[in-house]
Image (cartoon, rainbow, N blue to C red; front, side, top):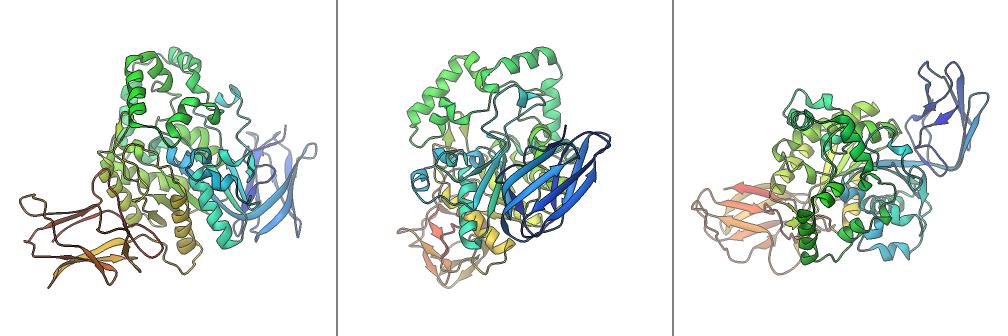
Length: 510
């Protein structure tokens, strides 16, 4: 029986200016023909292989709307309508990328505003083992959504704001392919082979140790019997909704933690056991989710993840860098990665941010050492008592700025202020930045900046001021003075460039 992959359907957006891949399954020995009907009809054909797979390759197209795709094998014809050609981005990561517009602090202005027909969204179902997709009703996923009041609550909030910004600025159809899952480490999203010859092997070794005495059949039965196994209707999950919505008090969080600690059975339902069905296992979601959308032609990837790598923070640059390589190899395309530096964070439920300064440093390393990657700062939207910042609009807009500047080559200030150098001047110490045009402080003083002397004593200087797009710290300071900016788990940055991009963390000894 002729079938296309789940990602193909009515209302989809295809990537312009690149070869377009369409694939599926069918009866071996037959030939599949596809026709894209638009301003000009474009045809492609391929023989179905012995394993039943086929793939069509259409030549690059420019932006277009209202196309139709017809695929047939001489017996069955599949037709998809209302197709656009524009810009496609994959939205990957964990819960802060998955974070639904339904829970966003600014959702009312979106739901009550004009609906943008140029934005379409596809979300792959959260499936952690083969066959799971047949066990639940995943009809809320696996199709292309339009911007409607009914569909918008299911959109990834940061991805929506990213798409809205690009759509307005580029005047093009924008397609988002969501492939993300809360609480997942980077190793879950990559082929484990990419970790076997580097320090990331620690993730593989830890998993092997945890499952070495596992009764597999008993484990599988228990996992399937767990109600938390059903991820098919996120808006019906009242517990998740309460944890994600704005306004959860510190007392409510502590009550939830106490409930978990006092009821091992409830905790087991919410936190499934490690094993071959567990979404956090190395390579798991690479097989059951990512490979299902590859090689759907895309411009690049927006990525928000890293919180769940706090178990091994010092190797994150290695693991994330290898993951990027894995994705590029899978797509056979040097996909650019635009990603979010972790927001300020103190504690949420039983999770704390003590390793976040190191994780942010590791993310900075990736942006400096892996070609085709750029990072935004989220230094002004974090929450001390919540791991999920509720305002995703600044995140999406800043990712769009990176895309507009680095991918679409628009002439604008798209990067956040970044430490360049510290030097001694007659008045004290001057901090210079890259990307600091129009540098300014929101408020009376520069937040999140600490100065210590060689005795590790905090030094409080006179008023720090912005001078010629840099910081001037007045006073006399001994040699080896340490200046730290935003290097704690939680902080509040109020130092911006003229496009309201907040400065990134740094530390310097001078």
